[in-house]
Image (cartoon, rainbow, N blue to C red):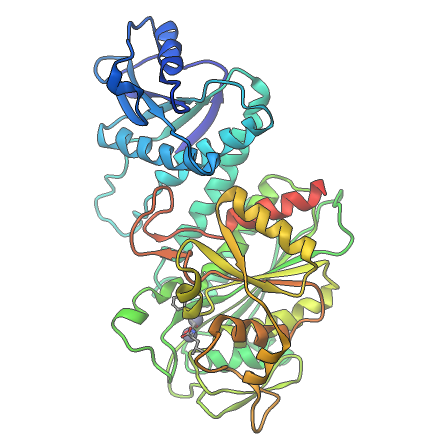
Length: 484
Ligand code: BES
Ligand code: ZN
Ligand code: ZN
């Protein structure tokens, strides 16, 4: 689908739906706008004064809907959610185009509001049709955001660019492991690098072996498919930062649990999504390049499947990691931290300003926070974490901070190695974070996205199954570092 900005309403036609969004108690304002624009004689009825959808005219060439927003706690999110209903309505009635206006002057917030409206149209219209024989998808294929100032065009363009990369992330996460192996994921990153203009280098199994990435190789040892380690780089000439921001994404293309097999059926069903962190960082690179952001960013994706094959790594094994330290494996299902540990150690060679990892790391994150946000941990300064939390509020990919108190480290003590790979029944997300911390020596933020990256039912513009969580958060955060 296409998104564009227009300074006035496009012409009325039977395939186009006009949507006007108004605040509570100002439905008359929306109707005045429609009446004067289209020469309609719509009157405000009592029932129209309430919050919600007002299908004022729904036939012929001039199809109009006014939505009252009510008083949402968060205006941007209110707009995204309303637009998601509007997209549903448009598709239900087979409209091909939708033109949306938000009357009134919203000051500094105007751009953010238009961005929210535009991105929600695109994201709400997302479908994964790759494997449907009959591709009878949504009728809607154009979204027009109407605002009289030409200067607002940039907000719609930005939303379009970012939403497209979120959709790529959703596609990647929805893709099953039969087609999306570690090698296929790396190739996809290479293709995207060519398309968007960032550099991509892929280490194959031989190179990973000669680098002695013990964690990644251990997890891969039960697989018939080789691992990959993908390095992406966006280094514009006018970068504001001397030291790069490094993104790291967990790329477990399928997590069976390995020999510590997940108790299928339920717990394994959605585990093709265990590379959602990888998808988020790859697609954030696409967006950063497409927006031509003046910031030097590197992204690392260690990738493999986790299976109980012939030579699979085994509880009791002691693994020597990329940084030379040893880990006693007591549960092969705690594989994310094994591959991330190597990538985090590798990240230190960039002398990074900040490293941010995204990972579907623990079921405990879902117990603690659910699907409404991710868990944030890390050693970065409070100001940096606060900037991440603020970016999260703006895009509504929210973060909640968990502590990394030193006492938790005791839970990872091993009898025979430097650390073991599981902590025990308590504080599961934190012990995973604590494990990762041991492989960092720079400012670092860890985002455990197990819950919000995959939904068992649609939640407005957050689609059922893969949500693409993390892309908008990373782009918003990185952009905020430029303005800083
Ligand atoms: N990929 C899972 C975490 C996960 C669970 C993501 C549910 C999304 C939904 C991870 O590799 C895992 O299995 N973690 C274990 C760790 C445990 C063995 C210490 C977990 O959380 O149970
Ligand atoms: Zn696992
Ligand atoms: Zn996993």
